[in-house]
Length: 127
Image 1 (tube, rainbow, N blue to C red):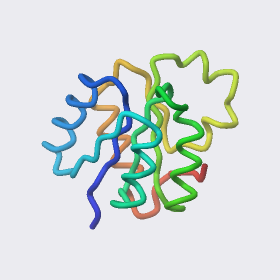
Image 2 (image 1 turned 180 degrees about the vertical axis):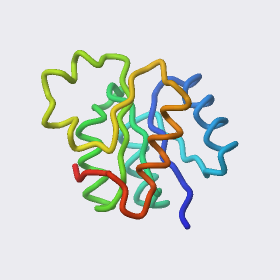
Image 3 (image 1 turned 180 degrees about the horizontal axis):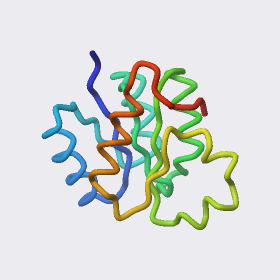
């Protein structure tokens, strides 16, 4: 079973924390800080799940989710944001994600979201 998770966040500290937490849970973590890096890693490594920040230096997590799903159609995608109010205006786009998590992240909620999204018939919606 593929246990790799693509983490896309330009906050180095958060990316390191997520790497540690996810690695301790038995996942292989692929880290990217930009849309460009995320797309390149996905083409090469084909992760089992993507965990995306909404605001990235070269794009946004909503469009990146769509682009990743174009590369890997059954890829579950979870969106993270410190700006949940921004998403209230665009509910249609956020409905395309398996889950939307608000920063600062609740680690228990993160673990539950990952487990649900990685189920064989998980609740992941298509972007």
